[in-house]
Length: 136
Image 1 (cartoon, helix red, strand yellow):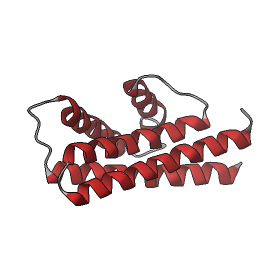
Image 2 (image 1 turned 60 degrees about the horizontal axis):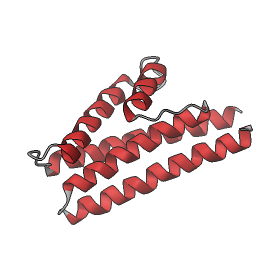
Image 3 (image 1 turned 90 degrees about the vertical axis):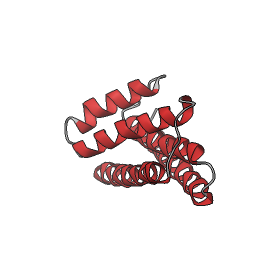
């Protein structure tokens, strides 16, 4: 891909993250389906991470590989704060529990935390992408 196409694709993925976060917020505000809100917030996080990876033209089929690569190349190297790596791991656990554990009861607090993590990461990614393309 050429640079213009990569930039467009990166921004497309970031927009997808933002739209998914808005869906999570709407579901959360309804207060009836924290499982779905957790899922959408996690996917907002996932799409934001994939926006960063789009710059490198790299992607993986499995979520755990996307997150592992992001942690290795961006969090461990402190391109993004170490704390966000921990929050992403926690968000993934919450999403897994919400989606796959029949005995898990998602709470208002955990769901709110999930949404805050998505908001924080999207803001960090947006700043990273803006800075990256400003330098180009």
